[in-house]
Each structure stands twice: as structure tokens, then as C-alpha cells.
Length: 529
Image (tube, rainbow, N blue to C red; front, side):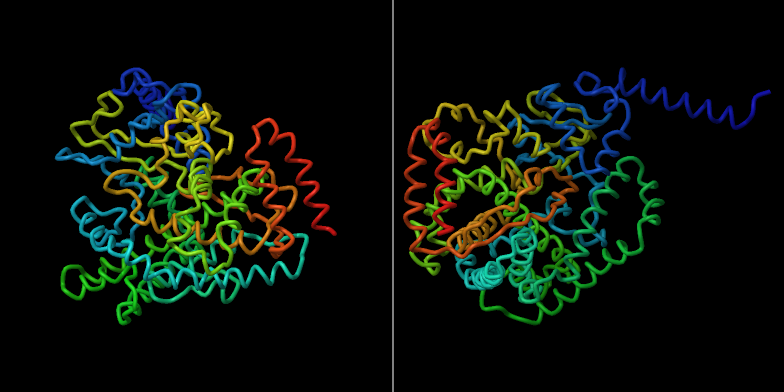
């Protein structure tokens, strides 16, 4: 006689095997390539989402299987640049590919952030927010941005004067600066990070909340009820931190509502719309966390990754510094308008965005019920589709020597190595009607910050950090400290050195490689005199 438990176990095993068989041999996506264990069950992809290494596995899959890979029973990912238009682009009367509902972490389903809002509400919010990113508004915001950069320079100068060979963590300083700037531009008050040389509790809570959100999204993909059960197993500390984020945001928005800055900030038109009865106060409050995270963490991440690649590529470092210090005779000359003349610095940031995209993981969409045409193939309705930026930007199908850090690939140098690059593949701020509204401000802010630092200081990475960029991705990179040593720039001593560096970069490539190491050894000797 069979035991009820044995029968139940057998039925469960039979059901599981039938699901695997269906996914592998009968599923509408069965023709798409991918590893069998990913195609068979959703558990593999969500397990690696939990671990923070899914994007790197996807990159390896694209190398093996091609530009479209099935990474879960009902999910396709792409590296073909055409996918940007087909997945995220304007649909012109055709239903859009909706955002993955599993990623909705907004606390109030009735009042969603601009990231989660439906097409109509998103358009309304975007129109109101766009005023803050106009050229006129950015010019009015410049004194605010520069005041915090000046404070950053003051703090780094004190660090340099100490001469600690262990260095200081530049990741913290970048976060301090960008969070203070965004706090002022969003709520008319700073988070006080630079003033106090420490993180505001809101920011520390935010880092935990991002990781928490990614893990909950992975569970919702498997089974929504499962996420509801597991949420009770999340440490009480993290749940309290998440609640604190929304509580503090409420207070910040309410205080901002009663003030009127002299410039157009991120909430100016949202607050006015609420006072005019066109929005509810809850709609304004819902935008707070998104504005802070999108306007600070991503910029700080790119600055951190960019600095790592800058200091591990001496020729690039020499050329960036040379451009900045020959272009500006005084720090006061570094402005929103003047930094547009730094062509190599812009190319450097484009390459940093390619190698270390702040949002390197997938931003999944779901095809409408009638399906969608993606990269020339019809994809059934209800399919998850998307692009892992890290995988696309490192694909040899899109970029020659994809693991080589070369800002020159973004300049019209005539170098045949980069002629075949698919520049349209690089969309680090996403694409289409839901792309990042703050793209121009981000470019301006990161160029202002790095240019001002490099005008004032010589930087050196503390040895032993060659693999700093080997990190996990939970929506954003889980960054380790990046320890740097700062030396105050001496205009008289270094003028000749940077002229020499500028001369070396005009030599043929093989001579640059031959002369760079002896040149830097000579520089070290000179600076020790």
C-alpha cells in the first residue's frame, strides 16, 4: 500500500518534470537558444538575481549563443542595438511593452512614481519635471552645484594635507557630493554629508532598500505569494530602514512645499501642479525617492567606476589631466558652459559608461497580449524582454576589443580599430519615452566634479585594488571602497610634466607604450626632488 506522502511526492515530481518538458520542447519560445537549465525553469535566473551575478552569466551566454538568448522559460534578452527601439522605443499607437510588475516597489499603488506610472500619468509627470532640466534651469542651478563641489575640494584638500598612505575612499566622497547636490535641488536642503563627513541615515537606508527591492522582485517573478511569505523573514532592521525612507521623504517634500527657491528645482512644477489641483500631494511625495536615487547614486557610481579606469590607464589619465589643466587657468573658469569644450573628457565618460554602466542589469519589459516584433522576430504576448547593459556594451558584436578601455573610440580619430563600433548600442540612460530625464544634468555634474578635482589634485590609486571593478549588481553596482591618495597640484612643477605627457600621446601607438613607463618613472623621481 502506498504512503500518502509517497503519492504526493510522486505527483509533485511528475508535475515538475512535465513543466520542465513543456518549457524545453513545447513552449512558444522553444526555438530561442540558451542553456537548458535556464530554459527549463525560472529558478536558475532568479537565484542568480538574488546573488547579484546574473548579468555576468548573461554576458557569457551572449558570447556563446548569440545576440538573443532565452535566460528563463518566458524571458528573452538581447544585445542587438535594434532592440533598444523595438523594446523601449516610441510605439506610435501600438501598445507599449509594459514594465515588469515584479519590480514595483512603490509603497502606494494608487500614487506611483514616474518610473512605475502608466503611459498617461508618466507623460504628465515627465512634462512637469522636464522644466527643471532645461538649459535655463540648469544655469540657475549652477551656483548650487558648484558650492558643493567647492566643499568637496575643501574636504579633499584636508585629506591630501594629512598625507595618509592608506588613502581615502573616493566612493564615499562622490556619494556625499551627489546626494548633497540632489537634496538641495530636490528639497531645497542638503543631506549634510559633506558638512558632517558622513552618510545621512536616509542614504544608508536607501542602499539597503535597493538590494531588498531586487531580492523581492526575484521572488515575485517566481510566485507573488512567495514574496509575501519571505518578506516576513527579512531582518527587521532592513524593513525599518525601508519605512524610514518613505517617512523622511514625506517630511522633506512637505517642508519643500512651503519654500520657494530662487531657481527652478525638481519639485517646482510638481508642487505648483499640486497647489493648482492637477496632482495630489501623494503624487508629489511618490517622486521623492526616485529623484534622489536616480539623481545621485547613478552619478556617484559612474564617477567611481570612471575614476578606477582613469587611474589604471596612465595614458588616459595623462591626457585627461592635460586637457583640463591646459584649458583652465583658474578653477573659477570651470563652468557648465566651459566644460563642453573638453572633448576628450566627454569621450572618457562615454567609455566609462560603456565599461561600467550605472544601471548594468536588465530593465525588463513585458510584451502586450498581442505580442511584439523585436529584432525582426515576432515574440508572443506576455514575454519578458530586455537588455542587460553590461552584456550589450561588452559585446564584440557591438564594439571592437570590448574589454579595452579606449576613450578614443568615441572620437573621430580615423583609427580603423573603432570604425566598426556600433555606437548606437550605447544607451546607458535607456531609450525612448521613458529614458532618463536627467541625462544632460548627469553629464554636466560628473564633468564638473571630476574636472574640478583633477584641476586641484594629482591622484593615485592605492596598490592592491586591481580587481576593484569585480562587483555584484543589485540594480546598481555593490561598490567596494576605492582608496586613493591625493596630492595638491603644484601649477609650476607640473606644467612641464603635463606638456611632456601631451607630447607622448601624439606619438604612434607602439611608441606611446614604449615610452609611457619610463616617463612615469621619471615623473615620480621629479616629484620626489
